[in-house]
Structure formats: structure tokens, C-alpha cells
Image (cartoon, rainbow, N blue to C red):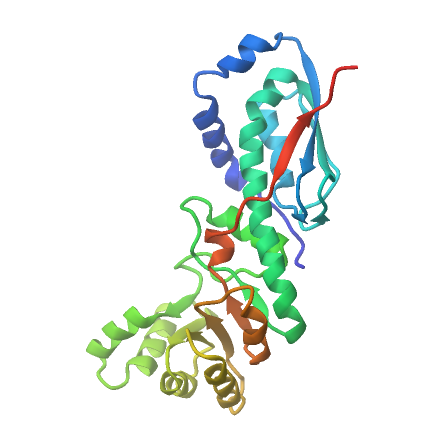
Length: 293
């Protein structure tokens, strides 16, 4: 697993917005119930097993509410966690803890859910030499955090956006065929290399073995095998072995936990899974206050 580093400065505005969204003009319930000077101590506890992600968010989030709050992480992002395991301790002014509870859990539960699903897919694919990739199917504004959580779960990031990698998809090829009749794949790859910074990976989508052959002949760096059957993917892998350097082959479409191991066995290098970031259920984590001494 790569070394994880969560850039808090990059998501600072996101933390601020989430707190404003929830607290608004003030937490009227906590202000009514808790004495202003009351202190409290709580434990973030896993209610089910999974993979932790988002722990480093806790300290800067609560610090925005009251710098007197202290956070102690007992588990690190990427760690496997078990039900009833204590993940972090938080202590400080009670109103700050109450006001930040839901926002903190929203971040950590969702990110841990993504990491947990990524780990389940990776555990099935990695023994067969295939990497699990995420996609751009992320909630708006959550791209960086979602892809960080994928890394925490043992997956790998595909392109971050439209700006850092070329992926020539079916709709691009339709336009390319209109522009360059009869040579859409080769011409699109050539144009992409001309218009991209040197070293940019150029990938092209193929939904047939004929398109795979065209992409191989045109020197694509990677080929996305779109919704192909296992026999088709195995044949594509054999076709690619004749080329040096061999392009990366990516399987995409209809990838489920039940099917991912069979896909990995075909010999593809990458398996992209949109569900990791758009459909991962939140991991059940709670913040439990400790009773006063």
C-alpha cells in the first residue's frame, strides 16, 4: 500500500463548509443542555469490521470548533479494524464535541466505507496480479477524499480528472470517425499525443477485439476492455503479448465482487470499479461519550 498523506490544506474549505452546513447559526440543542464550561471525553468506536479512512480529519475538524479539543488516534488510515474497537479518543469542551459529532462521523464513516469496499475487491484481485482502480464516478466535490480512501483500502487511483491522463472513450471515437474516416483509433491516439504534455499516458477504450487490434497497432499505452466477456479478455491479453512494450490492459464494466476474481484470472493488469466510490455503504462508526467520573 502506498504511503498515505492526507492534505488537510487541500480540504480545509470542505471541512468549513460541512460545519457551516450542519451548525448554521448555532447548535441550539447543545447550547440548551450543556453548561458552557462542561468538559467531555468520547471514543470513536467501530460497530462493524472494515478499513479505517479519514482519521486525520478529526483533529483539524474539531480544532475549528474549539482549539481546546484534543484528538488521539489509536488506529491509522488503512488499518483493518474490528467491531467494538476504539479508533480514536477525543476530549475537550462538551459543546464543541457535540457540535462536531455528526460532521466528523459523516466524513469518517463514508471514507471508511470506500476503503472497506476497495479492500474487498483488492483482496480478490491482487493474488492474480491485477490492480483495482477507481474511476471519476465520485460525488461532486469529493474527488480527492474519495480517491484517498481508495488508497487507504489498498486500491489504486486512475486519473484524478480530465487533465492528467488521456482516455479516448466511445463517444470520442464516434467524433474521431467523423473527422478521420476509417482510421479513428490511430488518428485519435496520434492527436492525443500531440495535444498532451510529454509522458502523458494515452488509453483508448475498446468494445471489440477488432478495436483492441487497432489500438495495439497504433501504440496505445493502455487499452480499456469495455464490458468484454472473460474469453474476450483472455484473447486480448494474448494479443497484447506480441507488442513491446506491452500496453496495460484494463477491464471495465459490470465488475462485481462475485466476478472480479474471474476477471483478474484473465491476465488483465487493471480492473476499474466505479462502485467503490459511488455505491460504497458507510461503515458503522459511533462517537460514544464516557460517563463523568
